[in-house]
Length: 377
Image (cartoon, rainbow, N blue to C red; front, side):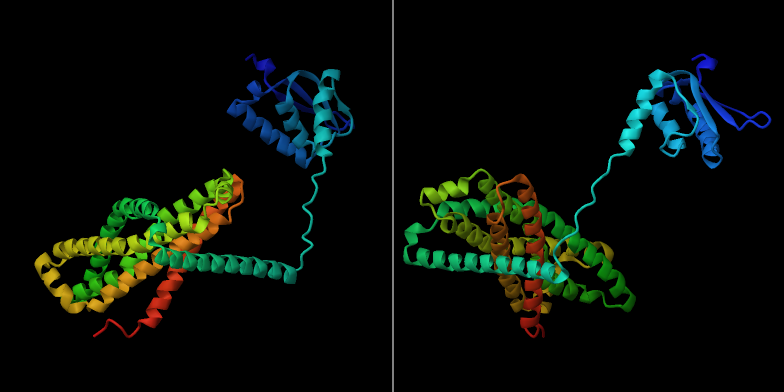
């Protein structure tokens, strides 16, 4: 680019005449893109913001585009300065900028609901969820009674398919997380026990914490994130594609064909996943104990039945059954409440996972209180 074509600002002040700024050169994006040019112009324009000149002259500008016009417009405080000299072809740029400044963005309307009304809305929404969940649980009990009276109506294929999808396919991730949790818990516990010379009690800590608490909790949280979201998304897609309405038209009940198999399948699969997760976590802890404390796997396995009562094992299995049924019910509840649009599908799936994990934690706290005096010597 020729030097005379570079964008420049020429300030002049003679005698009693006020300061005049002449804008020269090419004020287009390709000329302003050079870092040195842009930096120099920005510095000069900032000075003119502090001390505005009495006249701006753009008659010597070779070429101008919206980028150059916007740069000058910002320097002018987004309004035309007094005694502005423009060429006719430059008027259009600044007319558009003036029109853009006159756009009034409407303020968001204030909510007409008072705080009491907002609280009432939240309570009504909560009661709506509670009523729907109670109705879903009641329908599940009715379907269970129907199947007991008429075993031929048992949806064996659906239950088998759900056990495979929600149980068998979850073994990989639960095994990985279980081994890692066992290694971490064993490593951290061994560091503290070694300080006090209580290395032998590592088996007690790992056995009680994993079999009674961590195993069922880890399995439930992973299944809630994996299988719970899948259940909600499946029912939500069926709502979007109107398959649920088609089932009602064909006389196929939602409860017996969709809800009941998922709840029963997850109630059966969860205890098995808990056993698998417990075994993987104990293996990880046993390997870590062997490297850190030199505790042989034979000693670990021999000591484990003596320090962990069998009742803790059954409490863990009971948690698995309850957690599995609760996760499936929560997932089905939110899946059936999804509206026939994609936005509701995404929100419902997210809410389902969060609610299922929250319910699992609450149920675990209830188990801890109810069985607080069970399983300890």
